[in-house]
Each structure stands twice: as structure tokens, then as C-alpha cells.
Amino acid sequence: MLLYPWHHIAIPAKYFASPGDGTQLRGRRLLIATGLTDELPAVDGLRERWGRDVLHCPFCHGWEVRDQAIGILGNGPWSVHQALLFRQWSSNITLFLNNRVAPSDAESEQLAARGIRVVDGAAEAVRVERDRLRGVALAGGPEIAVEALVVGPRAHARLEAFAGLGLAPSEHPSGAGTFLETDADGGTPVPGVWAAGNVTDLKAQVLASAAAAAWTAVVINNHLMAEELAADVDAYRRALAPTGA
Image (cartoon, rainbow, N blue to C red; front, side, top):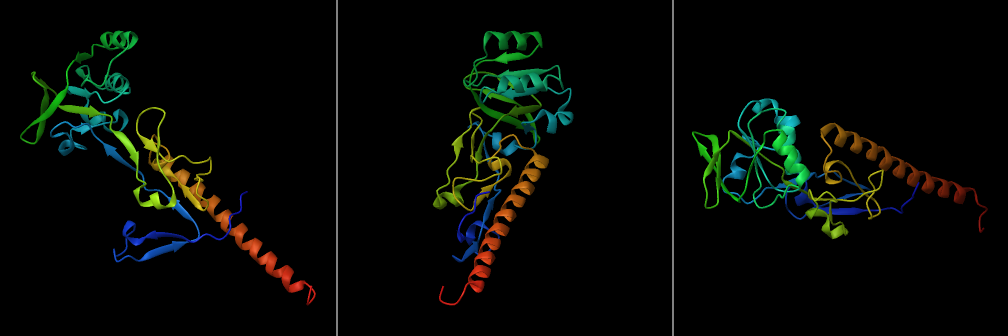
């Protein structure tokens, strides 16, 4: 177990649930669990429908949009996989390549075999009627009717508050966004600072994030205990040492 000297990590209070008066909160250790922010494609009206009829996960939202006309808005190499997953929920699937997706020959065969329509061209806007998604308008082209639209956003670790500690996000190997690299126990390159949850793992769901944070909290407590123990042992030895030794 690594033992660090006493650390007093100061973070401006504006990043916490405290008055933004410049007060600093201090602690001997820091656990970062700030999660992610979603970066959506620049398509007019898309963000306003996010979390309503613009969604991303077949396991979280598939049941609610079953048997509907579902569009998949291309935003990266995972979009073909999204289309194949949502095909389990509906036979009416359209993949908008959006100038960002180029299916391989094998993927094109899979899409055709599953009856998934593939549409070329960039998406310009989502169209809404009576507060319901109506379709996707292509740049210089037609509007394609859909009732739900799926997009895989790029996810970015929320680390702005910790730049002063020397922490910076890394690009995820999948191309899905950025994350904070840690060791198996959540330790970061900065002594005394740990991280857990989506800020370190883009794919972690709620239970996995909570479990990771619980384990990292145990590791942090072990470090604190070892630090306190080392200080007490040192004081005990000094108290027993002969005067003048």
C-alpha cells in the first residue's frame, strides 16, 4: 500500500454546494465522482428533444419506443451497432449516415439482412409537430419521418474544476469521448486524489459506478488509517526514547 504524506487538497467552493464567495474547502483526500457531460451532434432542435424522443440506449429506452419508426443518427463507429440493437425493438429502423458513418461491406450486409434502411447525407434538423418528433430533415434533401431518434453522444469527463491539480482527461480508445485514467483502485496520478464512476469509466451504469465508489472509499480510508497509524507509532517511539537520545 502506498503511503502518502499529509495532503491538504484545496478546491474552490464554487464547485461544491457552497456559497461562491471564494471560500476553499480542505480535505486530506479527494474522491472525484463528477461524471460526464454529453456532446450531441450540431443538428438544429436535437438538444431540445434530448431525453424525450431523442434517446441513446436500447436497454434504457427500447421498450418505450417499441414498434415505432426509429431513426439512428450517425455520430461515430458505434452507430451501426446501435441500429442493429434497436432492430430488436422495431422492424422500422432508419440509419442516417450523417456524413459521419461509413459502414464496412460486412456491416452493410448485416444492415440489409435486418431490413434496416440506410440514408446518405447530413442531418440538418429534427422536425417537431405538436410537441412530438415528426422527422429528420436532411441538408438540401427531404424530411424522413421518424417517431424516435437515437444518437450516441460523445461523453466527456467533468474535470474542469480539477485542472489546477494537474488532472486532464484522456481520449477513450473507442472514440466515444474522454475519461480520467486511474489505477484499479481509482487512484489518479496526483497523490491523494482518487476518482470513481463514469468520470473514469464511460460504460459504467449506476450500480457499477456506486460499487466502484464504495470500493475506492475503502481504499481511501485504508490510506488514512495507515497515515494516522504511522504518526501514532512515531509519537509512541519518541515518547519511549531515552531523554537526550
